[in-house]
Image (tube, rainbow, N blue to C red):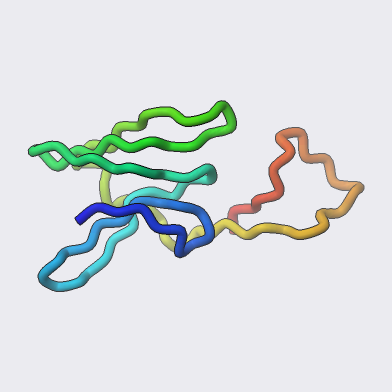
Length: 94
């Protein structure tokens, strides 16, 4: 089963083996990954939210499972005013 969940604080795609209940994170995006669809070869297309709105993304089977789950996004409340942030997003990858 492929599904979208916000367990990291941002919606990403996950795979769960229904027999073993083993879970694997498939994406690690900053905007969100939604509405996955999988073809007969195991390739996934999904709607991803970006700074320009929703776009369709393709994740081939060969690229699945390469997510570094040690990298997490952290929201910073009240960021320091002296810091320059030209993209206007206060998410840091740690």
